[in-house]
Image 1 (cartoon, helix red, strand yellow):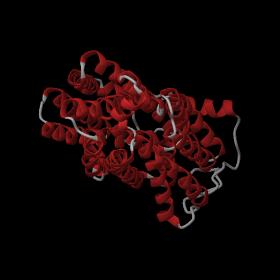
Image 2 (cartoon, rainbow, N blue to C red):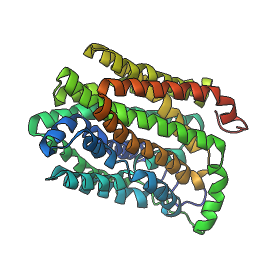
Image 3 (cartoon, rainbow, N blue to C red):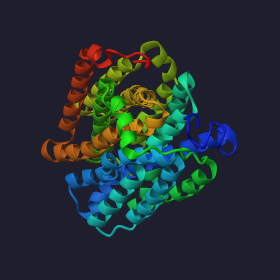
Length: 407
């Protein structure tokens, strides 16, 4: 890898770039399995386990909740002991816990298994980004992060449909069986990724001391706040309220629900592949604020329409917004600190995102129970609009003093 003092190097992966990118993309896809498979099955899980909307939100949130605390710890461990030594155990944990969730006889069992999945998934998507940040620089780094995001969002388009189809074929438990693929990805990563342990490991207090100036940067605070807001809205509305809404208002079954949940990702893929050029021209923050605007229009429209066809159009709009938010912020996280602190920095970003992922479904479940799905989407759209306006108004303060990072 490119970081000084690490045993691996840019050409250290078996088979060169192709194998390296294949394993990174496999890790990324595994990292998003946790919620893409469960979303279309939520109404079926509610019926089978006799739980309410709030508990259904907890099922979604459980796989993200540990990440808030665990992701930063895994980032520190990855900086100290190497990316591979952290990634492989995370993949094994995720796969074993996912198969246990498929066997859940009760809500308590399912919630516990989903929590265990959260410990495994906490180190996946973030460390995949760290691997790309270690290996590539400049516009190539942004391009590869954009391609990785396109892979991720292709998964977001395909996996909900696959999960819904499996649930329609054999029930929600069958939809959980693909979690076992994480075990194969673990073997793949162990074989392909180089041994990138640092040649020397500084004391933990020194590592935190060196990382503190980067974490104290106000640009980092802005990045974390934006990431939290983006994932709160995505996981609360798109992955929790939407499948409930599609079943209650439009009577869609699991396969159709999965297809609708995957639709925004199609727009996200197309947008992600063009974002390296858009970011080079416009910078990070204008894209982020525009992304929140896309959320405001898309989510608000779902609450205001009675047509399932307009829901599909709205889903495309927020899919574009998702790309304009997530890809620039991921690239930003890799650029705000050098290699030795990159794992900590990206883990901080993922920790904020995980907090949003955990909080959003719980809030959305409570709102759906209290005011219904349509009002929940209107409230979510208003929150997104507020974030876009407030962020744009504060832009100068947020990016003041930037020297080497494209803001």
